[in-house]
Length: 262
Image (cartoon, rainbow, N blue to C red; front, top):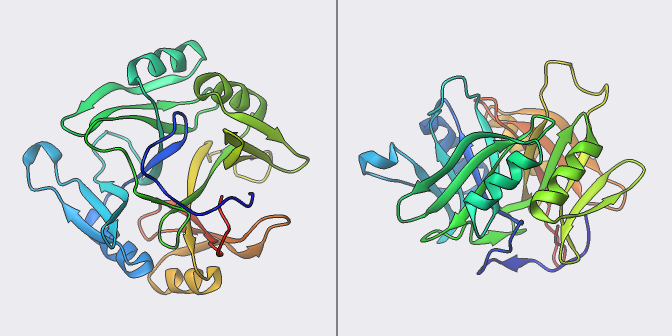
């Protein structure tokens, strides 16, 4: 996690995180939880085609999406979307790189075109080809998406896959691997190895920036979340914590200091 400036997103970068979305069994309860934790304001679509889809705003800036569990067997979870200029060609690249298409390229009328896929290690992610909706408006500011992190049991296979599909740089350290684009790191990867029970599948996790990690974790617990990793200082990185919301979705929070980007 480096030292790049906080940015307001106006144009998505190919391969970069551009969207984050929660699928939950209880959208109403989730809207209340995240409003109380981050101050997000919810706007729920009225048309039947949207099936109750909610956009979440920090002030007037779009920061996330929220919906129900529309696919059978889907668990409550956050999904990270990565920008693509061509959802169909990226889907072909995913399949050629031994990924699995869960939802093939599909139009979201008036907004864009998306794909949901799993990498060769099993971690689920999405791609987003913008039309009317370019993605989130803010990154790396309190209440907005910051770092993104992959947990996997096969880091080498995952690194090769994402480098091929999205053109990411891969900086492998002794304990942690960082992903980047254009000289700017935006995410990382950790080896699950024996740290996780065998039944826990590889996954992508979003971190949201906050002004104070300790207060954020404390407030989340009071709102019914589980603190799975208490506030911790990371060597050469920010203070962070990992939480599970009351419906079971896992996410992290990290401190957003002035002049600090992820």
